[in-house]
Amino acid sequence: MENSTKVENKKVLIKLEKVGKIYKTGQIVYEALHDIDLEVTEGELVVILGPSGSGKSTLLNVIGGLDNATSGKIYFGDDEITAFNDTRLGKFRARDVGIIFQFYNLVPSLTAYENVDLMRDLGIDIIDPTEALGLVGLADKSTNFPSQMSGGQQQRVAIARAIAKKPRLLLCDEPTGALDTNTGREVLKLLQDQSRIDKRTVVMVTHNALFAEIADKVIMVKNGTIDEIVINDNPKDAFDLEW
Image (cartoon, rainbow, N blue to C red; front, top):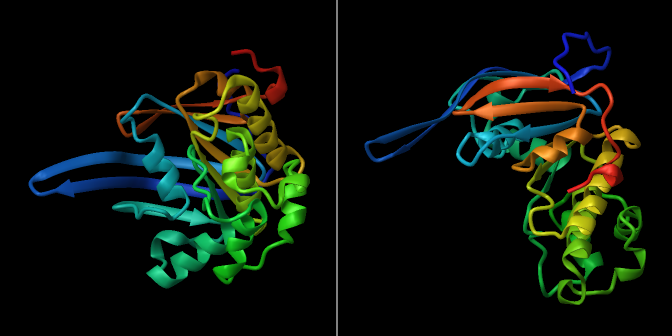
């Protein structure tokens, strides 16, 4: 990887201008983010790296409208999401943002199909759950409950659930943290294909610096600020990672 000032022709999907985030607990004030400027283009796979407490998860959350910025502006396409009221922000998250966590967050009493179909119950237009499960290689597991699936399979159900509503932005918080090496590589490949094949913007938080090798853009976060942005002109295929 190398630093780059190359001008991208892709359309900017996400833009942050002087974004800050402050948490207050009684008399304690904690500045999690300070003056963040950032652009993410459509279809990019972005990896956010940094030590624990650096602000990387907070950055992911404000990008997706999961948490409100204290200062600055955030744009998604032509819309300033920092100006949205709660109702409009909720609609934005429901329509445009898919979220994948480290711990799958599946409902134990529901089958894989039903876990994906939950999105429809929230009033969201989704593709058929069987089709979504097929996209992650689990068409034959639609009637299985989470307890009948491996950790990797459960994470793939979580990915199917996130992509079923065809979001423009996919947010991933340590998506391989609970998986073994081989299964983690498979999940990374699925996420990479979301960017490469489906042209979906993927933003991933991780503590694993190795994942930078598959990213189009790497954001190094330190003490609530962006320490460095690195453009990777030749990202590796996820299956070629060695760890």
